[in-house]
Length: 361
Image (cartoon, rainbow, N blue to C red; front, side):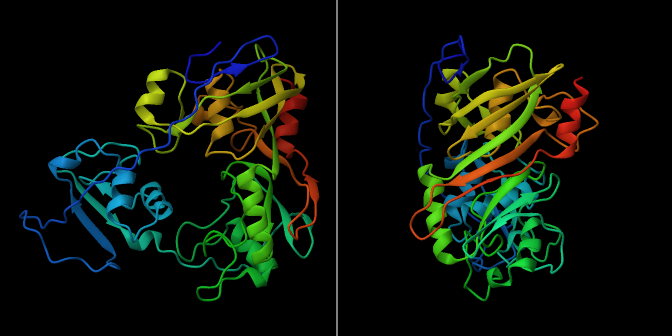
């Protein structure tokens, strides 16, 4: 049995759970300052660089929530991208989005690096299409390829190739299908080093239908992963709530202890799994989630003592034969309805993961 903040339930184990507490809003005020401490004239909303000084009343607030709350022209997604790209500096240095600001901190944000510019098409780019009709396409994303561009004009992402094949998805002015003009048609994302099935809506109507299905847990997603087999029950449920990591913006934090739940206000997260087969020191595991949080499967298995093979970020063993962590989105399924036909699509395990299992060591 794990701590009261969440748990791992195996075939013979128990679990305890405690859902995440909704993050409370922080009402804060940041005051732009000149170097001499005087307040300058108000910057135009579109200024490329915003410079702010944190007053005493804001000491202890999270960096990302502070910026998003007090610069409302920047969406939460743009704030996150700015921090991830290093476009936000606190006293001249990069800082994690969950880091606490202090009175007198100088926060500099280069907004130009995260402008919401439309993604561009790359006709003829390699694209593995596992399934398509006039409503939806299922793409088999290779490990190592980003899902969508972060910077204006960026090439080499899956979205660039998708727009090259499906020109009707190319944004035209303010008209686009999807969550943003950077990722038209994308229903859900995959980490750069995660391979496998990714759902793309080809029309505005199918996007709205599948977005709602994902939110309601009716879009089924299954993953295959490789981890150390010793001590892993044949099946189980991992229910540690997840928060942004307080010190490392690259990771998320599985809240195992009750104090972590109180301190970090995580979101509830549930991962169910079953062992497909055991081969030598490794286990091939199928995991399912209804709506995955960022890095959920990776963080959950690491917290349960079974980090993914090759996932060095979460303490997994180094595996030179793998290009990254051993996680593959193996199947997506939708039962049909609201104008979108049913589909159930599986994509094969990539060669490097198969070879790791065949080697058995």
